[in-house]
Image (cartoon, rainbow, N blue to C red):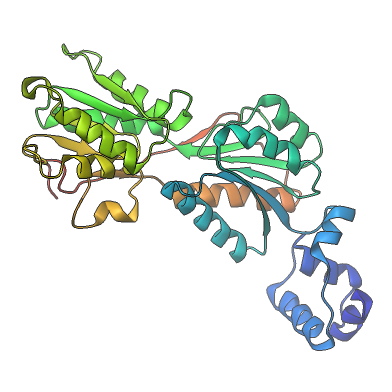
Length: 333
């Protein structure tokens, strides 16, 4: 059986059969379903991978991610893959344990004739972005800069989240501040920290910033114990964690101590992980606009697939986060 047999049985052109299976171009949904049904009845199916390698027409998209033990990263990938499924896009996952390996993964994607690349981790070097885009592929960066004027980039407005966190803690009357931050080369954590510090620029007391390479709950536990080791009068009374894993671990690190939330100390996290709402934590945190970001990326992919050459935003699209107030701050809902 060949695609010609499918076309003959479905009473459509062979080009329409190719379009139905590749996702390349517009086709009426009832026509697509008829073609799929006929193909199944006569026992024919295309080799999508082979088609991609030969023509680049299969709906394959390279997706780069790292550290899926990092809860937020897993959440991003899950939402993105669901959106791909809804739109007949097929992902090829390129994975590494360290963000530093993202450039190597980007180089690997070039040997696969995919429609383009979605980057959800690490840093995109401008020359690597140029190598991808110059082949006619798209490049979309989700929750990070793309570092190229012809690429698409959408992210949470991290500096705004940091500023809102500082303003919320100031409104409670807090005066001694601590930031639980990630590594200094982490774009998101650094942006959140900078926004937080900018909002506190006029504060008399210096703001403590503790960096963690892992940004994990275990690192958060260590930070909680480190705070308990400080003299009581020198302890911060407000903590902003640049991700929820650090914040949740920090709460665990304080358990059994003489420090109570929010009576003695207010805590705000970032990501609104499912566990942030659990009764042992009830963490005040920021919800990132993940649906908006994923929709933006997928819309860009579909525009590229349909040959729509509209203007690409020349800078990162920033989407505001939403503060979810729970029991680790005084402002109860």
